[in-house]
Image 1: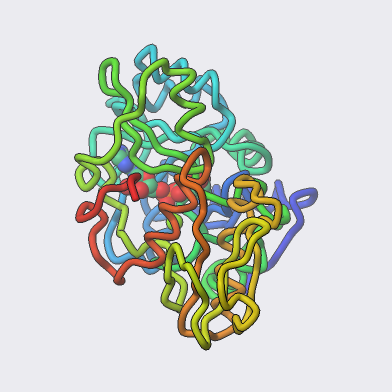
Image 2: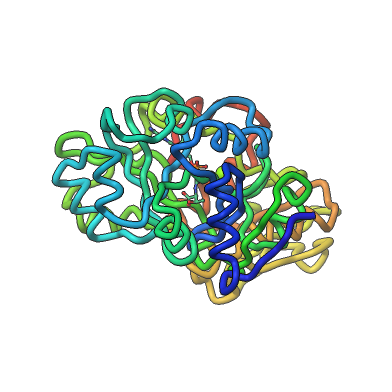
Amino acid sequence: MAEILPIGSALTEAARRLLAGEVVAIPTETVYGLAADATNGEAVARIFETKGRPRFNPLITHVAKIAMAERIALFDPLSRKLAEAFWPGPLTLVLPLRDVAGVHPLVTAGLDTIALRMPVGFAADVIVEIGRPLAAPSANSSGRISGTTAEAVERDLGGRIGLIVDGGPTPVGLESTIVKVDGASVRLLRPGGTPAEAIEAVAGVRLERGGKVGVEAPGMLLSHYAPKAAVRLDAGDVRPGETLLAFGPERVKGAEKAAACLNLSPSGDLREAAANLFTYMHRLDAAGAAIIAVEPIPRSGLGEAINDRLRRAAAPRDMPARDMPLSRS
Ligand code: TXA
Ligand code: MG
């Protein structure tokens, strides 16, 4: 059992533990993060140990101020424009690492680039408090669904960490969108909580998709977001024994016979669906059925990231993501 403290009284204790090299689960606006001092190699190693990650994938580094980001990475004008438009918020920028960045090489898996983002809320407060960037992947054991509540984090990792900071359910519910600017073009490395269309509107160019995903985002295993149950996508019906992850006002054939049914958004709102996605997959998984049937979900806006996570959950376990295009279905 980890100690669970509400955000209102957790700042000092979380800061103390982080400065002592411990990992602490903290809320961000996207998902809970398993945070450690990004400048402390042993602390970062504890993240991998705690998650049971099969390899040292590069992690996202979280900052609280643009000035902190600029000490770590080199900003081209377009990346700066995106940071100004979307930070703090669910957008991660992959940027060239400065020589004097001070971030431990384990964070970047030895790459000469770094993934940076500025989170909202408690995560930003604790970064200001300790004056150091935080490395933080999602707070879940490797291959499992990202934690979007303190309870989910406790169930999954409670036996392995000392402190969980409880900020309630995370509002976005999906990890950040990851992009990398390359000259005048912008590549989408992972769809997420900032819709591609919003980034395109600021950047003035279409995002490039697919291609060098395996190289650019080496950490992305296809089956990264896997519940225990198998996942059947774009289900046109519900078969005997299946549970149903529904979307919108209309039900597919056989829905009334589902062993359990949860609706991501009865009104068909993609933002609501994103916020519920991981929690509902957790709950249907806990219902014990072998298969979760998922109704079709639109692919525009946040639907791109929702469908991406669902495809990963549906994929055969432990296939490298580079074997499939990241953002097309
Ligand atoms: O919403 C989020 O982004 C959450 C919360 C906790 O902030 N964090 C998160 O972090 O999802 P993490 O460490 O699990 O995300 C790692 C992703 C992987 O897909 C990895 O390959 C990619 O970021 N990544 C990290 N560094 C990279 C780099 N230098 N180049 C390309 N991709 C990189
Ligand atoms: Mg994750």
